[in-house]
Image (cartoon, rainbow, N blue to C red):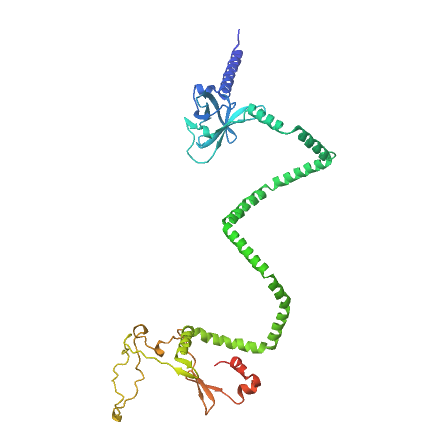
Amino acid sequence: MITSRTKKQLLAFVFITLVGVSYVGARYARLDKLVYDSSYQVKAHFADSGGIFAGAEVTYRGVKIGQVSKLELTRDGVDVVLSIDKSHKKIPADTIALVGNKSAVGEQYVELDPKTDSAPWLKDDSSIPTADTRIPISTTEFLTNTDRLVNSVPQGSLRTVVDELGTAFAGTGEDLGRIIDSSNEFIRAADQNFDVTTALIRDSNTVLRTQSDKGSAIRSFAQDLALFSGVVADNDVSLRALIDNGSATANELRTFLERNQVDLGSLINNLVTTGEVVVKHLDGIRQILVLYPYEVAAGYTVAAKTGDHYNARFGLILNQDPGICSKGYDPAERRTPFDRDQTKQKPMDEDAHCAESAKKTNARGAQNAPRAATGYRAPIATYDLSTGKTAWNDQASSDHVVYDGGAAELFGEDTWQSLLLQPTM
């Protein structure tokens, strides 16, 4: 008779057995799909099976996400149905499915290698086209290519290479060992400085990109440098003469500066003031430089030599274009030259002038001359002969101007230097 204790033990054993069988069936035999399917199906179109089989693993970036449920033969190849767990939903649809070997034994699996990290994602009934599938090289093709490679090498040459390699490495075991040890040290140091090496490669990419962006400027610089080098080569004789004579020229210049350093200082100081005046009157100087060549050319037409005599030619053309300027003379009264009545004499109207713009009448006169810069006023000085004092801009000054001796006494025969070295007023 079975005791109650034995019954309890049998019931516990049956329960544990059922739990274990259920777990093993669900975990390895995938019997849980008979009750609840927690995966979605994706079909990959392969041109050839590549050795893949039903039940093979499906991985995504090295992580198992499902398995191959079945293979379907089609007219264009083989459709491999991938059963992917629903917990892996964000797998890009733009991905490559390739059949690989997990080991040298040749156990195949399907690896999903995404080409992007963004949507759309794979879902139930999605498909991967044949263009995005890869299979490993077949064993037959590998052996055929290896045989062709071996047969393409002449046996005599191969024997020579092997003999030479034997001669080259004979007795070098210790040296090869040191090379291998040093290589290990190098690899270990590179691994320890991996972050630094990565940063260096990243920064070098920035430098190379900058060089690529500046390619046109670098080519232009190289062309200009080549042109400069060509000019230097063409003037080699002149450059050699300049180098040979440069020392003597430098000595002459140094001697000149040492002898005239005081006078040159005064000259440069005065040229500063002269330059300021010239800058203020650039408009007038520009007009002189433009008109002076025309005046000189016209002078040759006025005075011409005929034989031993000079003739002066003068022509006058009267017209009313541009019109006569009358604005600015009102209320002036016309008086004929024949009116000699002294009782009618009037003082000269000094304010009368042509007030028309030069564009309308082409009037000449000081009012149309180029002016100095705005805000500039030339200094005005007056000299009193009785006191020997000068006054600047209507302000009295106690400065005495002495002319006794003057520049002649100071410079002697070089009196002309006073034009450059005397203080400007």
